[in-house]
View 1 (cartoon, rainbow, N blue to C red):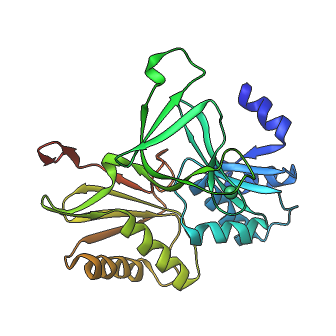
View 2 (view 1 turned 180 degrees about the vertical axis):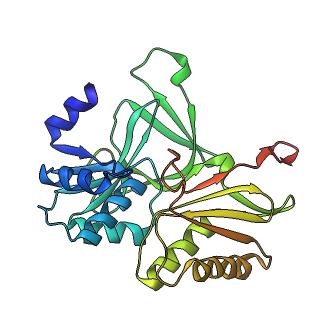
Length: 277
Ligand SMILES: [Zn+2]
C-alpha cells in the first residue's frame, strides 16, 4: 500500500517484465508515460531489450532508477540509449530502505540523515539514530564498500559510496580450494565482451563447484554462446594463469534470484577454509 501510494505520487512505474505477457506489460508501463522507471537492473535490461526489439515508441521518462543489483557500465549505457533518459543507481537495504542515491556526476550520496554509514575493514556498517533499538547500531548489511568525501552537494550529504561489491562472503570465485580470484574480474570480463560486441544482456554467475562457473544470460549472443564462453575463459586465464570452465545457459534463471550481486557463490566459506555445500 505504502509503495503503491509512493508510485502514484511520484508517477513512477515499477518494472517487472516476466513470462508470456512481458511485451504487453512493458508497452503498458510505457503508455502510462511514467516520469520514473524503477526496478532491478536485470529486469530493466529485459524491458530495454523488448523495447529495442519491438521498436516501441514512448515518451522518455525523466529518469531510470536501478535498484538492488550491481550494474555494469555497458549495461547502464544501453539503458540510457534505449530509454533516452539518465540512469541512476539507488542503493538500499531491506532493513533501512534507501541508503544512497546517485547524482548526475556518479556519486552514490548518502541521502538519509538518520542513517550513519561507516566502513570497517571494507564492510558497510549502518546505524539508524532514529530508532531506539540497539540492534540497528553498527548493523552489518553484508555488503562491502568504500566511503569517500566529495565536494558535491547536489543531493544528500557530501559523503558517498565509492565502491560497492555485494555480499562480502560471496566475493570470490574458486579454481580450487586454495586458488581464488575476485568475482569482479568476471564482471569486468562480461563488461568488456559486451562493449566489444556492442550488445548488452543481463547475466548472473553462479558457482556451485570448484573450477567451474555457470553463466546465465538473458539472450543468445550474436556470435553464439561459445564465443562468450571462450572470451570469459581466456580473460580469467590471462588474469590468474589458471583455467576455469564456464558453462553458458541462455534464458534460464538469469532474473530469478533477487540477489544484489551478479555473482552468487554457493561454495560456503568457513573460518578454516572452504567447504562444499
Ligand atoms: Zn554528487
